[in-house]
Image (cartoon, rainbow, N blue to C red; front, side):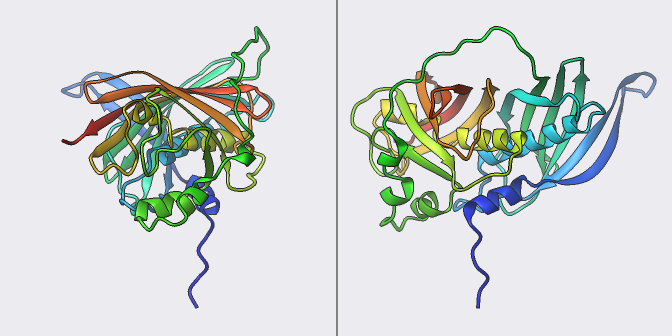
Length: 313
């Protein structure tokens, strides 16, 4: 009897459970070895990847793993228990595609630990090749001015069809993975663009999303899963604006960079409304911005991404 197939959310949690490899001291000298240019310590972690139908690592996975690696580095500070620092922003560049069958190492450089903020630089490396480079910033809890944009109206997510329901009868490997292999329940507010273009040419998209099950009560893990899910659909406003669908064989897409700001605490295992728009597409690239709201209307995060989007003639 074959072993049972693990649930997609269990796979994601395993992927985010990075193994600590130890610390390494990096010593860089100027040419000729006469002048010290840089000396710093890196914390090293290693993780596995989710298997993908196309064999390439999902970018959102690497984003989430970098969040975990950076957060563990900050959690090791001497005052972390009394004054925990929460991730408030990340800025990342996708450098090269990765192989989902091979492990990834994460090198975390402590750039600064101040009285309220900590900054970390993380490189995701596979076979001595950098896949992604990220800078993150963490902050201790603080009061101050507070306002937010209101959440736009949206139907109850329970009234919308899930991706599994939309793609249940499609045998394409990518469609089967979208339907049953992903750990996030994604429900489009308007018509989805999986198989065919959506009606209308508006550069706007909105989805409800949440993890496919309960997550542990770890704020860093919830932020990592939100970062993971933020990379699923953010380029869809460009597809909608130009009458394209994910299954269009002419379409070539890849994330180029990713930025995310966490405004308020939230859970990734509760429904989040993710509204998205695209102000511009040109030169084979599309720029998109997104906002995440809790079901009660609290703005929890803002996201921005530019992606390569090409249509072969």
